[in-house]
Image 1: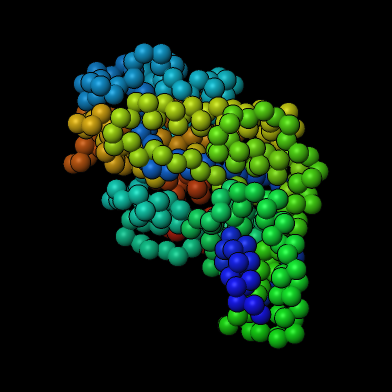
Image 2: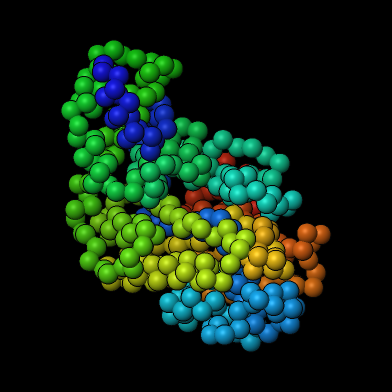
Length: 395
């Protein structure tokens, strides 16, 4: 094979990791267990300041700790004690309709304040002292998936969350480009060479099989997405484009059960006010358009949206009009017929902080995952989420 062309075209395979042939042996059984419900994950990368997202507007300790950062003007009061950042106004109808559950104080024991390590913990569902090589969605695919496109990430690279031990999701930020790349005659040559060579799984067979799966997934996504293109007007930003693609996939009936999206830029060590306001505007306006799109196509009832960030921020502002890395944070869950809409639990005490001046967590994030798997995806969390986790009652 031509080495230069091999390198050029292997970019497509980067959205998938090696898929062993033996995965095929359980496809028939797995296809019966996928169900019809879908999960959309939104990652707010960088550590969103949860205390300025859900604001304790009736708490003097909040205003004393943040004399220049505290939000008082135009905040959206939801209860006598808590309210939205003004930029979250597009989510107010969801809150009022009982379609949003806000879980406060979500974290884990012995929190890590490194972006990369904390994100690994959230994506693998590990403890702070564990190092796992597979993600929680990847392990879901291992047990219940049948094809890479059963879980899709709206990016060029696949997150650790989407990588299993035997099967991984697929990553693409433009399914048309993915399809056109897969049409390259090179892939036909790859398939012919693979069939002729009878390579084993333990050498180049891994890579060949990956590229074959990539081509198959690209064809499937492209052909099925033509069924129902989205005509909803979305905001003009990259995150909104991700959600528009997800809506088109869902409304077209794609056999994808988990979608992974992200919005970055939340590491607000300095000049936080304007940065966070802009990012939360992108988030709320895009999610609002997404939900409306699903409702118009009668697919919202079968879709759950989970929003998380790898950690919160310190309670006290810093000298640069920003906030430093913290621990516990809020998690948003959006869906139809939630059991516990509004605020699932109270905000942590601002007078009883940990040794670093952070909010103390009260809910382990892995309990959120286990609840979604058990109560929404209707599968067992055993073997996916390490250790026994308490199930919550928000769905």
